[in-house]
Length: 268
Ligand SMILES: [Zn+2]
Image (cartoon, rainbow, N blue to C red):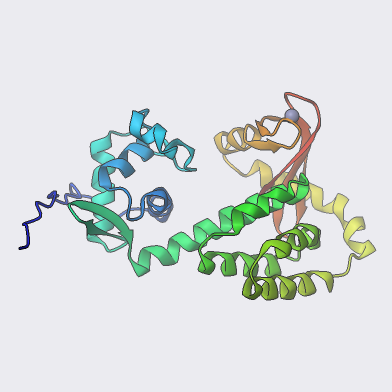
């Protein structure tokens, strides 16, 4: 005897939105990552609005990197963006018994995995710089597609300084991933540190400064305030920094506002 399930109904309304810029699409997809098959449209709107709702805080969704990303607009306006995403097949709704939950479409996942892999790549670089090799524990049970994409990015980065953390990572991985990590290590170890690279650094720093100053001031201030300090084990403000450039990325090198120890931040 099947009992009729009273599904919670929903109605999509993009409220006249014609299109969304790619950076917003990425934010919306990143926010949904913590909710896939566990939360719906309303919770995503709350994350992006930076809501202090009890349930959201209990689920630690305030640690999402896009928490509060749309705090300047109303939740209703955010919901319209979310509905636009569903109507344009970046996200979809699937029912878990009664509840309509968010899932990625192939199109949405294609974008999100790239965003997520970039995020992990930045974190890995920071962890390597600060000798926080325990970071690799966080990589262990991740989606395999993302991990392989991350390893491709590492192989393409020419960042030889990542070899030590890759060795640490390799020790805790299963065979398939371990093999791929070894291939990446082999690629990085072939890169030679040339004397020329060091000599060019002074010249480069001029162009690095120029690039840095071409960023909007608001962005620069935000980046300055958002530097990981290995000693404080917290996000800190960077002071007395110089701008450098390495493998097409800008690097801020300075000291932590709080403890005075050396900190760095990569900007791409
Ligand atoms: Zn510090």
